[in-house]
Structure formats: structure tokens, C-alpha cells
Amino acid sequence: MSWYILFVAGVFEIAWAIGLQYSDGFSKPLPTAGTVVALAISMILLARAVTELPIGTAYAVWTGIGAVGTATLGIVLFDEPMTLARVGFISVIVVGIVGLHLVSGGH
Image 1: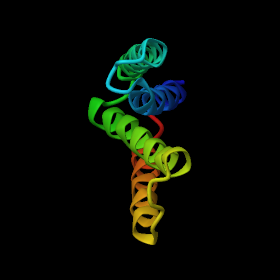
Image 2 (image 1 turned 180 degrees about the vertical axis):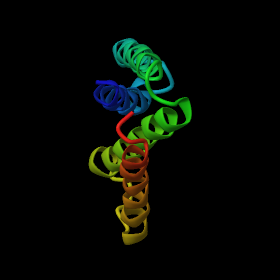
Image 3 (image 1 turned 60 degrees about the vertical axis):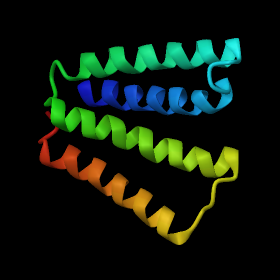
């Protein structure tokens, strides 16, 4: 169950990171509020996940999910460049996330 909680925490990390762009430096109240709520939920879920998962593994996976999702949405939503190198390095992060899950023995 902790891995699922960690995954959801990573999704909320993506939400708050993308929310930063929409909040325009915290100058727009509604996107700012959404960003803060997503950040809080992400942190609470991460804290819950690390009660059963090693902190190093959980933190690396959490940030990896956030990095992959945010970089991908940056391409889709904000016209950031989609180069072969960028996609390749995003893929390396995905491999790292999966690898950490596999070597953790599911714990």
C-alpha cells in the first residue's frame, strides 16, 4: 500500500510544480491556493509512505515521479522543447524509479 501512496504523492508533486507556473509567482490567488493544497497533500502522503518505505528510496522515487511528470507536462502544456536527448534522459529517470522499486523488494 505504501507504494501506491507514494505514487499518488508523486502525482500531487507534479500538480504543485505545474501549479507554480499557473500561479505566476503566487500572484494569482486560485492557482496559488491549488498549488499550496497540492504541495500539502504531496508532503502528507510522502510522510505516510516513509513510515513503511526507506526514506532514501521513497524520496528518490517521489522526486523522480515529479521530475518525469513535470518535464513531460512542460512539453505538452508549455511548449518546452521535446528533443531526443530530453526524452532519453526522462526515460533514464523512469528506469531509475522502476529499478528502485524492484530492488526494494516491494517494501
